[in-house]
Amino acid sequence: HKIPHFTQYAWLESLCVERLEEKSQKIEKELKQSHQAFQEVFYRQLCRNFGFNTNAHAFELLAKSLPLNLLNKHIDRLDQLEALIFGQAGLLSKTFMDEYPKSLQKEYTFLLRKYQLNPIDFKIWKFLRMRPSNFPTTRLTQFASILKSTSGLLPNLFEINRLSDLKLIFKVKANEYWSKHSNFDKLTKSRSVRFGNGSIDIIFINTIIPFSFLYGKIFEKKDVQNKALSWYEEIKAEQNAITKQFISHGLKLENAKHSQAAIQLKINYCDKKRCLECRFGHALINSNM
Image (cartoon, rainbow, N blue to C red; front, side, top):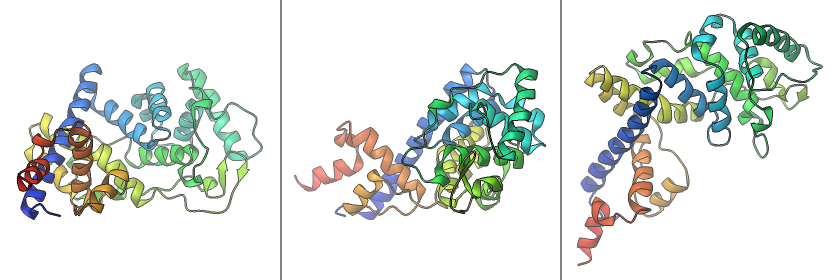
């Protein structure tokens, strides 16, 4: 609160760009390893982020076991997409009572043989201390719906100009079976199975915006890069331990651009004691001299 507003604003802007550049560099490294398979890398990153923190690794392994070009062969059939995703997740390997998992299992058995697939270990999925809306089963069926709604992740996804238009693509619902089930054959209270606005925001912050920014960089489309940066301003600031700490010290975080900047500040400056390289640190030290 002691630092002038202009200094705060300018440093937050710089920090956000710095964080976005770092994310882009990580994606570029993956692109190099995959021989510039942009859509495949995007698909893997999107899948990983559907696991959020708890099941990120499991979702990443799933994506690696199930290439996008294989899923694209079944993009018009949601039942087949779900069968492939749940099957490769290792969640269709037991005997079921309900018709829905039975039908998925039957479909997956055929596809498993056709493509000679190897599912991941089902034990890797974490369900404990989670709300049913965050269960991996719910997230997996939502991911299948998004793949179908984007026709396998449209090549022109990054050409969409309005954030609100792009968000509509992600406002999908899980299969209605999951509105009354927490897992296969396990009933629960009726609940919404729509992919929530908060979850969509996190996906955009961690996946869509960094990839859009890099897309603009690779294809020399400055307008796409600027658009990606401006999208941060249309998303609410994240609420986590880092942002809450800065807010308690008088820093106003108005949107996701500022919350991303705060995370960058904490991880890359505060934790590393780079106070003299930080505009806030420099201003505060000078004010006390």
